[in-house]
Amino acid sequence: MIEEKLNLYGMSVVNADVTSSNGIQTLILRLSTSSLEEANQVLPNFMPSLRPLIADTNAQGAQIAICIVELTDEKGQLLLKYLLDLQLDSETWWMVDGLTQGWFPHPPPE
Image (tube, rainbow, N blue to C red; front, side, top):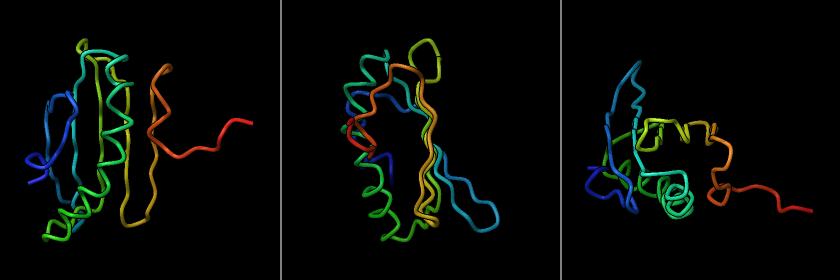
């Protein structure tokens, strides 16, 4: 259901799985992009669309509590690992140097 509605903005799905442990549904999206430069172009559009997509899917009964996104380039280098916990309303991430920060809320530079 998620893959049908997911706008990848040019990225590719390597793998999409939903796992369940102790009644908690986790969506794991493994995505690929050609380069860091392409990732910097698409992430500002893709990442803000993720939470509403999961909320819409959950409204249809999916009950996804956690979403993990792993984005790699064509060489397999990890560019971004992102975790969204909908139960705790929190998000954490690791990203490679040079990846755009335009997709997440952060304080403006002084």
